[in-house]
Image (cartoon, rainbow, N blue to C red):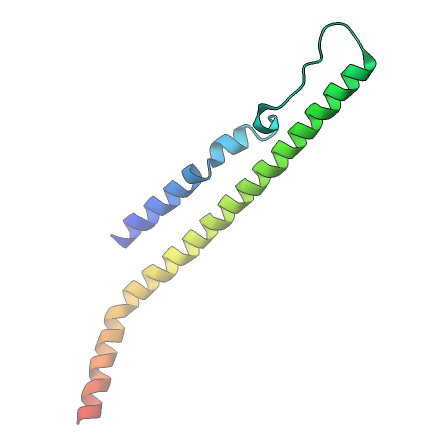
Length: 108
């Protein structure tokens, strides 16, 4: 039961952080903010649109990378925490027996 719950957390975490979608759209515009280059060739307008679009893509990539990193860190915590909980769960019967033996020794 613990392993099944642990597996569910491991499967849920990438979905919660939308990790596949973030990786797929890594260099997309941030919140779809972008300028059109317009018709014709106006160097100033072209430079403004290009600059804004690049800033939007870099900002989107940085935020998506941060969220991917955060999701990976949470995934590591889930792996380590699940392993510790499983280990404690397996040790609990031994602790119960050791506690009963220690308690009987105190009474006697």
